[in-house]
Amino acid sequence: MHTFLIQLSKSLIFWLTWIIIPLVMEIIPAVGSFLVLIKKYIQLQKKTKPVAKYPEITIIVPVYNSESTLRNCITSIAESTYPNEMIDVYLVNNKSKDQSAKVFELCQKLYPTLSMQWMEARQGKAKALNMALFSAKGKYIIHIDSDGVLEKDALKNMVEKFESNLDITCMTGTILTNPKDIEKTKGFLWRLFRRCEFYEYANAFLAGRNYESETDSVFTLSGAFSAFRKSTILKTELYNTDTVCEDTQVTFQVRTKLKERVLLCENAIFMVDPIETLNKLYTQRQRWQRGELEVLHMFMDKRVSVVKGFLSNFAVRLLIFDHTFAFPRMIWYFALIFLSFTGYSVKLILGSLGIIYGLYIFSGFLYFISCSLYLKAFPKYQAYYLKHWYLIILMPFYNFFIFWIRFAGIINSINTGGQWRSKDYTEEKKSFFDIIKLDFSFLNIIVQAIRKNYHKNHESLASKKK
Image (cartoon, rainbow, N blue to C red; front, side):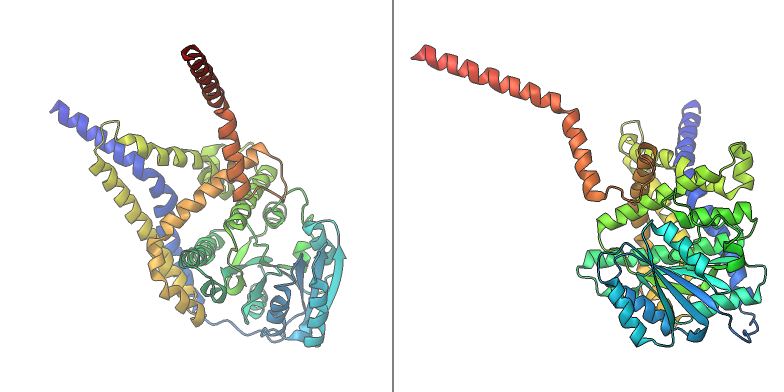
C-alpha cells in the first residue's frame, strides 16, 4: 500500500508539473477567448446605420527604401471604397537610398484625384511620424506601412466604426500576410512556413487581439495599420524615439495618460508581405520582444504586487506569461531529456507529450472556428484560411520555433541597449560558435601540446634508430 501511494503521488506530481504550463498559458485562455468572441460575433450581426457623409482622413505612410512596394500601397489607397476626395496622404521619407521618390511621382500621375504630399525627414521613423502628425488635417489619422496593401473596404470599415461609436478614440486594424505572395513562394517547406505565418497572424489578430479588445487589454496599436481621432493623438506626447516599438509606446500613452480604451477593428484588413528570410524573421521578432520589455519598463507601476497585478493589470499578466514563464518553459523543454534517467518510463513521457500536443491542437481548433467566423465577410481570405485547415496540427511546432527566437530576444534585451539594428540569425549563430570556440580553446591548447610532444618523441626515436 505504501509503495502504491508513493507511485501515485509521483505520477500526480509528474502530470501536474507537465500540464500546468500549457494549461495556464494556452488552453484556459483559448477557451475563455472562444466564448467571448462567439458572443461578440453574434452581436456584430446587428446592422449599424451607414455613414451619411464620410469625413476627411489623413493617411501617413513612412517610407524607407520602399521602391518595390510603394506603388502597390498607394494603389490600394486610391482604389479603396473610401472617397478619394476625402483622403490626404502624407508620404514621409526617412533617408531612403533607392528610387522611392520616383515611384511617388509616377503615382501622382496615375491617381490625380488622390491628394498626396512627399515629406523629407532625416531623424528616424518616430520623428518622421510626428512631423506628419502636425501637418495632418483629417478628422482621423491613419498610419499604414509602405510594404503592405489595404483591403478595399478597410478604410471605410474603420471610419464607420469610429463614426458609429463616439467613445472610440483609437483602433488597430487586422494584419494578415498576403496569400498571393505566399503561394508564389518557391520551395515547398518555405511556402509551408509562410502559410503557418498566415495562420499565426490570423490567430493573433482575429482571435487573440480581438479578445483583448473586448477585455480592454490590447497591448499594441499595430504600427502597420492603426488609426486615431486627431483630437486624441495630439493629446499624447506623440511617438517616442527612446524605444524600438514606438507604436506600443504611444498605445500605453493612450491607455495610461489619457485613460482611453484601445480597440481592434476586426473588419479593417491590411495585408503585409510574408517574411522574406529567416534572418528577417529573427530580427523582426527580436525587435518586437525588445520593444515590449522597453515599454513595460517605462510604464509599469513598480508598486504593484505580483498577485494583485496579475488579477487587475493586463500588463503584469503579459509580463508573467511572456517573460517570467519563459524561463520555466525553457527548463520544462530541456527537462524532457533527463526524465528517462530519473525513473520515468519512455511510455509515460511520450504519453504526456501526446496529451499536451492534443491540448494545443484543441486550442488551435477553437482559434480556427473563431477566425473563420470573422473572415466570413471576406470570402477570398476565409476560403484560403479554411483550405489550409491542416495547419492546426503544425502550429504547435511553428510556435515552438518562434518561442526560441523570442526567448533569445529576452536574453539580448538584458545584455544590450535599445537599438533598431540587431543581430540576425546568421550573426547570432556565428557569435554562438565563436563563444563555444573561445570557451573550449584550452582543449585546443592541450591537443597542440600533445601533438608537439608526440612529434618530439617520434623524432627522438627516429634519430636513435639511425
